[in-house]
Structures are given as structure tokens and as C-alpha cells.
Length: 262
Image 1 (tube, rainbow, N blue to C red):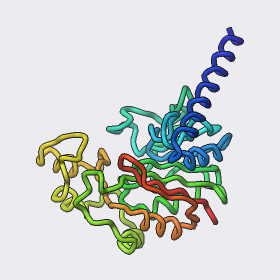
Image 2: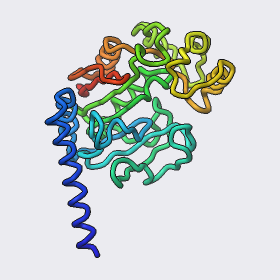
Image 3: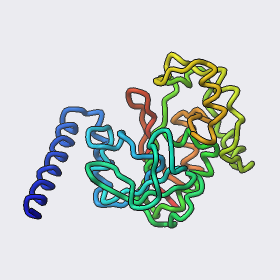
């Protein structure tokens, strides 16, 4: 029985690698991202707010295929994305792979060891954090020197944030210096007023949407800030990362990769 199980695992893994290789050959736009994902082979990472389809086998960035282990962080034991979860060896990602699930605020990472991870992933998560510079500084602490950080955020031009202005780096720095917390409601009026409902994948009446925004501390659905690649570049540099790659990707992604310098 064990022999058959091992054979099945080998077949599954070979199939995964074959699919990834075919993507590499047939889709030139994915080659750099697949190359970066492969550089994380047999390394241990931490994902904030996942798991995410963006990092799975058939994605732009198949990190789940190559990594040795990935642990996860979510802010609550119940979220609108993951449902009910609990802390422990319960972070299920990829094809039957499991890491440790932490329950913690993204900017706090209680019980997560410093200098412990080879890479950190965050896909459509940082925009839900009220104080993103505080989060990035904390994320830096849990990474080893020269570890990679991979951020994926929404491109506002293709999302319901299209009517909002890009957030300035100066504003983010002011939020950090004022130690803004997750209770912050500074942008709620703007979020409600400028929401482009036609681009929202979850149709709601204006009243329903406003109620959802007002209940943000419990569900974390609000995009506190609107990011450009230039501002993300400044943010990473400010938090002691060297930017090594950035791009826009269909249908609505901003992707930026950095390396911890200190």
C-alpha cells in the first residue's frame, strides 16, 4: 500500500512539473514569475491572508509547487474568505500540502519567530491593512536576510477602486507615525462614495455596501488604500527591501518582488 501511495505521489508531482513546464514554454509573459517561483524551491515561507489561487499550480506564480513548506496567517478564526479556521497545523494549500496556521493581525504576527522564513507571500491582502508600512516592517522582521517578499495587489484601473485617487507615500508614512490601528475609519466615506459597483464581483445595493464597510473591523473587506507600483516600490525600499521585479498582470494585478537587505 505504501509503495502504491509513493508511486501515486511521484506521478502527481511529475504531472505538476509538466504542467508548469508547458506554461513556461507556451506563455512568455509567465516565464519570469515561474523562474522566481522556482528560486523558492525547497524553501520555507509565510503567507499573509491566504491561501491564494494566485500561487497555485496553474497560476502566474506557482510557488506552492516548489516550496518546501508554507505557513499561513489570518486575522481571525472566521473570515469571509476562508470560513472557520483554527490555529495549528491546519494551513492547507497546494495539492495536499499543509503548514502551520497562525491567527494574528497582519501587522503584529504574534508568536511568529523573527529571522525564520526564506520568503513571504501576500496576495490581495495588504490593501485590507489599515497601516501597511507597519505591516511591512513587521514582515521584514520574520524574514531572513536576502529572503524574498512577494506582494500582489489590485490594479485600481480594473477594479471597483477605479474612481479613487492613488494613495501617496507621504500619507502612508503619516499613518505609520500616528500608529493607525485596524479600527481606523478614515477612508470609509471615500470608499462608499467612490465605489464603482459595476466592477464589484459581489453586487450589492448602496445601503448593503455601506453597512459592509461600517462592519469592516469584523470582516476586513475595505481597501483602505489604493496602490501604484511606484508607491509600492517606495514602501519596500523604506522597509529595507530591494525591489527586484515589478509588473502589471491581467486581469487586475500589481506584482512586486523584493529582497530583504537588513
